[in-house]
Length: 130
Image 1 (tube, helix red, strand yellow):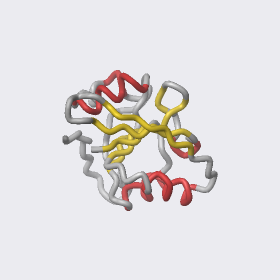
Image 2: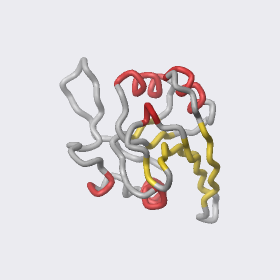
Image 3: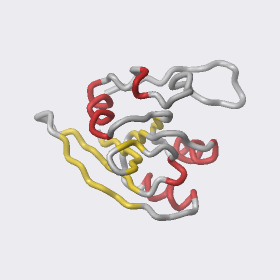
Image 4: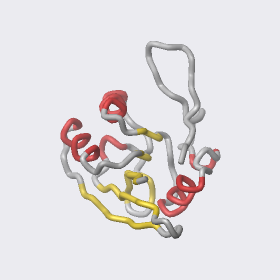
């Protein structure tokens, strides 16, 4: 499984739409992680989403995200885990160990990792599955 993290130096980037650096992490069988850094300087959202999707990762972990970009990413089949904050190493560990749902990884002011949908009133909780 590969996971893409939108980053700003050693932290999760606060807004996916303007993030220019992404770290792709793959967990090896013996519990080690393989990382590679990808710079995406495209300012246009469609081009940026195409580049992110071309990494062939399963999950995208990010901070805040616009409705437009969220719709494009999820339409591509990639799982989106928005409203995440924290040090990159801590978030990577949390994703691969199933503890990302802890409140200390939520952006300040966020009620939780809820599935946003304008057409339904029902809310779904994000759950990480390995």
